[in-house]
Length: 187
Image (cartoon, rainbow, N blue to C red; front, side):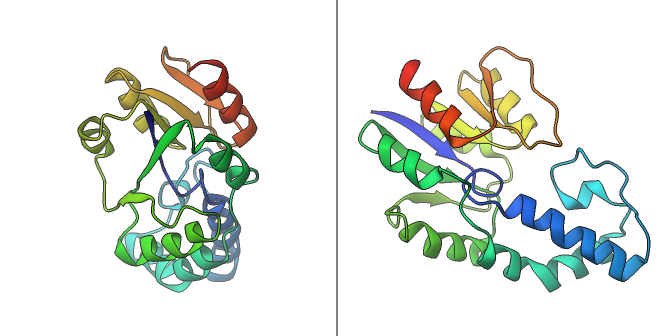
């Protein structure tokens, strides 16, 4: 059975988009102006001209609220449940222990309470290779390129603000329906 590694934020959960909402609110309420420097960046730490202290203050005030109220990405429950007889799933995420516990609670609600989760993975490629992953679904273009360079087919879950990746073995997808179609027609 082929193995798929999933990222959580921006792939399984809409937390990346929710972070965007809360960062815009924080930027106005805290700074009283627009301090965005690059809206195409995936993480809020790279989008704003904030100090490290401001980023930490934002995270401490908002992370739990964002992660607990984030919804599943549209269609993820449908597609994962349709694919579970054909693929083995694992999660490889940079989320910390606390953040991962919130994800585990939510994954139980769609029938994936026993999925193997590797968290605190800031260099995902080693875990992907160790686990002999066939496919990686991630919203980080650098991770997708790195996976492709190491023989793993990467499905780049592209955020609307990010650029397409034009590289062999990187498939640009915008929703879980496209992921389903690609996996079912190309396996």
